[in-house]
Structure formats: C-alpha cells, structure tokens
Image (cartoon, rainbow, N blue to C red):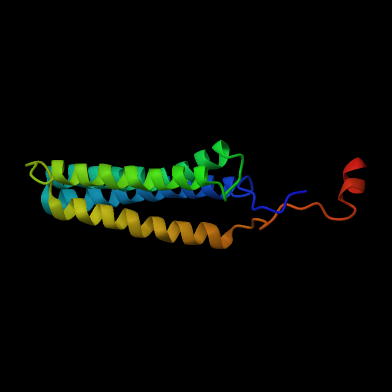
Length: 155
C-alpha cells in the first residue's frame, strides 16, 4: 500500500498527449505548407515544416522527460532526480531553441513570419491538446489498497 502519487497511472495520459500532439503537428504542417506555399512560395513551405518540426520536438521533450523521470525514479514524483530530469529537459529545449533561432535568423530560405506562425500554432495547439487530454483523462491521485481488494483478487 502506497500513498504517493503514481506516475504509472499518468503514463497513458502522457502517451495520449504525445499521439494527439503528433496529429496536431501533422495538421499544422499541412495547413502551414499550404498557406506558406501560397503566400511565400518555396521558402514558406520550408519554413512551415521547420517551424512545425521545432514545435513538435520541443513539446514532445516535456512528455518524454516526464516519462523518463518516472522510470528513473520508480515513480517517486517527489524525488529531486525526477525534478532534475524534467527541468533539465526544459533547459535543453531553451538552449536548443535559442541556437536554432540565431542560426535560422539570417538564412535566405527562411520566411520568418511563416516560421513564427508555425511555432506559435504548435505551442498554442499543444496547450489545447494538453488541457483536453488531462481534462478528459481519469487518473487516481493515490494508489491504495481498499478493504476487500485482496479478497476480490484471490477469486
């Protein structure tokens, strides 16, 4: 019997958020490439793909780091190692994002507005996905054995 929050119950929720996030990224890529191609030509298409990929990868890092931290700490969400892994993932995202922004800023094949709008659509869309997934999921707060559970599992 344990009374600490169980990350094993959150694993399906995080995996569902990753799947929905991938579907969202696919939708943003299709719409972004179409509109980017119409308004900015080939650089618009490439920028939409790059922006969508950046958003998808960065947003997946959060769920992946929580899953990794959960496995590494044996679901002890109050472990400093758990927080270190999750915060380390955020730090990696921030540093890589800054590097990519500075590298892509002056590229002739990048349409900055399309790139920016693709990233924003990915971030806002992922927030909506996260809210929908969490709001529609059922996960227990604690993992406890109730009286009679052992009797029912023996049958």
